[in-house]
Length: 180
Image (cartoon, rainbow, N blue to C red; front, side, top):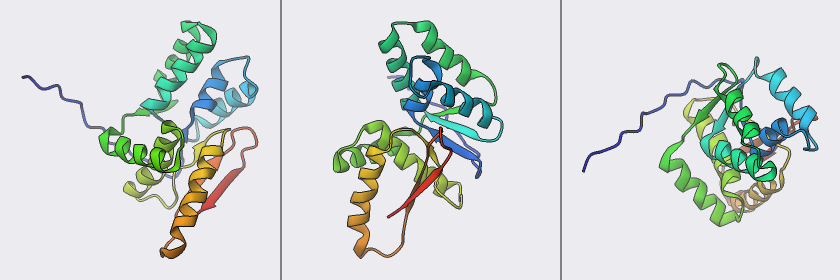
């Protein structure tokens, strides 16, 4: 049986990068969304300063939400056109290791799988690139992330060393650091 090879991907990440959540991208594309203006402005303003990292799962989920809510493929294609424009974003397929670790987080904490992917990616990509801090996650919805932090904080009371997650609200631009 012939093999299909998926090219490996090397990422150069630096301290000026952030991972985007589905809600930010959906809000930027759909004019009917509550945070439409601030999301669009955020992406336009910060794409020259930051490297936006979009896990492929976020891109797929965003496509589904946009086309499902509106029935308009043209709006979903607007997202793809923005992503494909040089300098706007890097779409990453993180592979089975990331998926399996994210799945464990999702099962253990009972949170959305895409949020689990963002949590794991934020910490693991930063560590593998020797960044000083986890990669911030740009999101409006923090419930699943806070749930994860609370569970990890409770588990780590007996463990030496601390970890953290950084959530950035694209509207207020206030980064919130949660240690556990």
